[in-house]
Image (tube, rainbow, N blue to C red; front, side, top):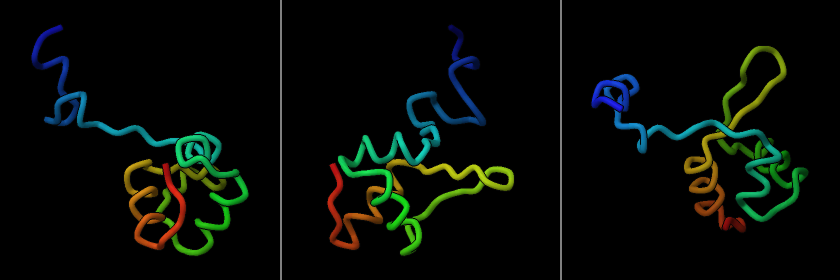
Length: 73
């Protein structure tokens, strides 16, 4: 793989964090899906894709939960 192929918008591939679903985030955090929904309603950062699809950046969501004193893996 060439150096240019490993970059996405100028960032090395290892620095690009993918968005995850609420199910994946719940698994990463060690909580239930309903807990993720409750945290989102309380202000946990997320992004809406289209009309109904919501995605989370794990590092941002987990950092927010930890700052709130919530359980996060």
